[in-house]
Image 1 (cartoon, rainbow, N blue to C red):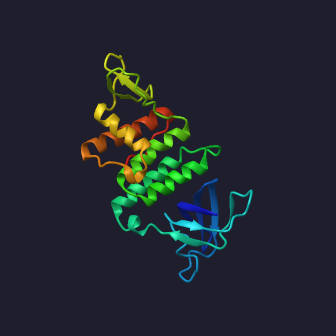
Image 2: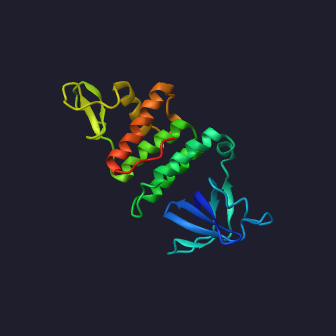
Image 3: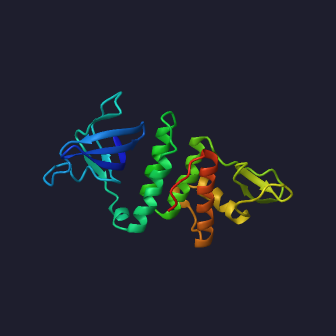
Length: 215
């Protein structure tokens, strides 16, 4: 089995707990002795590692066995701003429930890391909404669009009474972020990026009634 370490913490004297997201959901691994400098799994048991390990069926917490690092995402970790951006991905994972479609969500998460940029993080946040049950309706009906409204979760039109929280140009960018693969997303200028990021946070907070840590 493989998974991504989204959190770790010290455990007992020499061990670590690894909180891992996989295609089957969340798993907690006990990395025995991994706090020792001489431990052969010290480097495996690190935050933001893609790791491979021996699966123990029907358990969500067990000892890490046959651990191997598949990707340490060192280019992300070595840049402070990128590391902060990557942490947003894991903040968004808190909205994923035990019965959600983990296989698809894991694929989205892994893809965002493998094609990493601040836009891939933003794209992941909007793509994830589909699997959380809060997908934004972006299919127009022929009327003149003025943007997207957070409360309705849909496109709004010029004569509608609803406020447009993002404008037409940003709505077009949102369509690309949701439906294009990570490596096909077009660049977005800083002003529109910040507006869409603000919109994403506000959208999550309104529909989930849970306040995110802003980054």
